[in-house]
Length: 270
Image 1 (cartoon, rainbow, N blue to C red):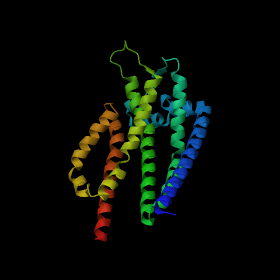
Image 2 (cartoon, helix red, strand yellow):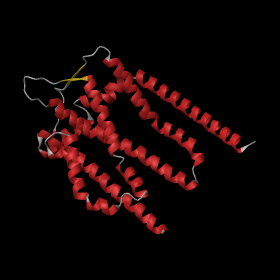
Image 3 (cartoon, rainbow, N blue to C red):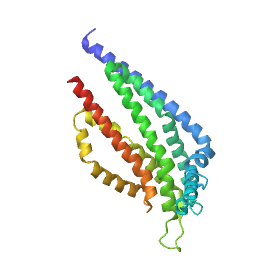
Image 4 (cartoon, one colour):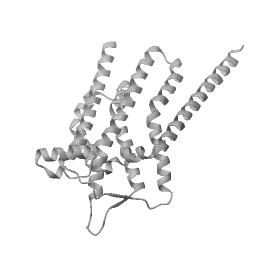
C-alpha cells in the first residue's frame, strides 16, 4: 500500500472515531437536557429562581451578619422584587433554554473526557500530563467562577437593581427574559474571569508574560479590579464591593504565582 493511501485511511479512520465522539456526546447531552426539562420545579424553583426568595442562603447569611454587627443595611430585602412574563411563548422557550444550559454544565466533564480520549493518542507522554492539568484547572476555575456569581454576585446585584427606583411612582416589575439574561451573563462572565491563572500560565509558557510585570502593575490591577467590582455590583456599600474584590485579587495573586512557577521551571531546565 502506498504512503498516500495509508495517510488517507488514517485520516478517514480518525474522522470516523471523531464522528462517534460527536454522536455519543450529543446523545448524552440530549438525554440530560430532557431529564432537566422534566424536573421543571427543581430547575427553576430550586435553582434558577432561588435568589428570588428571601430565604436564599446568601441573604440568610447577610442577615445574620447584619444582626451580629448591628448593621441592618447589610440584610437584603428581596420581597418586593417581582418577576413577570410579557411574551406568550417566553416561559416555554426559557424552560427549553435552561434545560439545555444545565445539561451542558452537568455533562461538561463527560464531554471533556470524550474529547481527551480522542486527542490523547496524538500527544507525547509529557504533553499528556500538561494537557490534563490545564483541562482540570480550566474546569475547576470555571465552576468556581460560576459558584461565586451564583452565591455572591448575582444575588447582591439582584437585590440592588431589583429594589432601585428613580421614583416611588415607578414600580419594579422585572421581565423573566431580563432576569434569565442577567443570570446567565453574570455566570458566564465570572466563569471566564476566573480563567485568569490559566491564561497567565499559557502566556508565561510562550514568554509573553513575566511575574515582574505583574508585580510592577499590581497597583494598577487593584484599581482596575475595584472598577470592575463597582460595575458588577453597582451597590454603594464597601462590603458588597469587597466580596467581589477579594476573590479577584486572589486570582491575580494566584496568576502571579503561576507565572513565577513557570519561570522557575524554565530556569531549572536552562
